[in-house]
Length: 120
Image 1: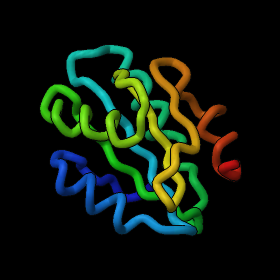
Image 2: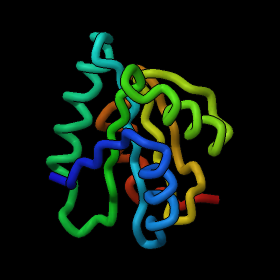
Image 3: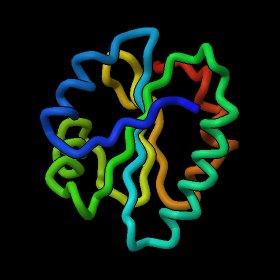
């Protein structure tokens, strides 16, 4: 499975943006430890990640919105997207939003559909 980055500081967020360049992409999963939907969606996401081709250039970061509210707010502000939880945010190598989904919209079919989607 792809390495999991624990996104828990604004400094790490800034570093990820700076160090993710094409062909690499970044998938951020925002979740709450007290939300049963987050847990269910995370299981599906982990299954999808375990099946991801080894040669795909994807960094994966998880963000606990309860523990790191300020990081979550900064990401929403920087990307000009509404905060939700659970939420998946898929960024291109140049930090453009390729796809975002929340709650049960985060599933293997939606994630698979975005693997080769080109940002336009």
